[in-house]
Length: 302
Image 1: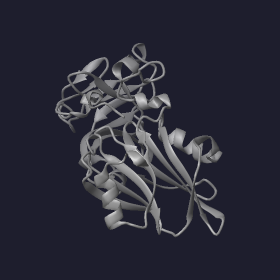
Image 2: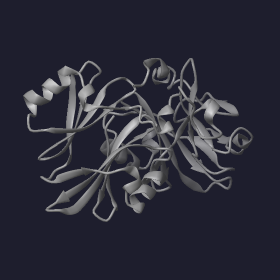
Image 3: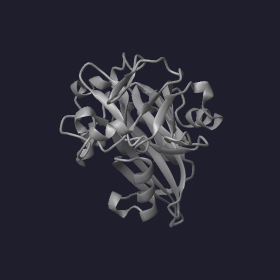
């Protein structure tokens, strides 16, 4: 179980105050035009890094935001391509926009955009191409972990150790949650339980389809989402048994993601889909693939 003392970085009172390059401070208000050379980061880390959140105890960076030699200009939300705004609405409903940057080469050629938001109090960094098409969720690291494996024991991202610290047994659910299911969804079969860093719960269950139900840390119902609509059978799948193209997509789109659970979905004995639950920088996603392992959609859970 995650210790609440390890998540002080989620108290983002100063997120809106400033975003820093490791070599200089950007004190301009969001949307005001300014630029910073990113080559100066090379001496600090081999990953181009941009502050995504800060607290009294540490600074969280989004890494691999651009290429060496690029420059970044702050850009207002309204100046972003419409495709980015639609993507945020569709995939991060209720999120809060914090900052955005236009990434250009040293010669001025537009390469893409970096957008920083918070979703359910979690910082999220997103990379889009020059047309505003989503590319990937940016990996986050603490300052001391910018080089090397990217995390340390007891840090914000220590669930990357492979021990699945955010997974708990179904029998460990609070009585308030199990009672809620028995009263409201008595036919649900509980499949998997994830514990968020704020001690809230994400419960995967199956009835006439696959559902994700979320609860607060005291077991109060938040919301329920159907993530697969059909009456099918669901078989747990190990990470090592995922199709190669599924694994490639996850690694490319969610760098340093943590595998939580996966299921093959079958109808009349034939595989129709793969459902993979992951954690990417403390934000949880359900990523759905078709029977051939091709990406279909991602649902942001918490």
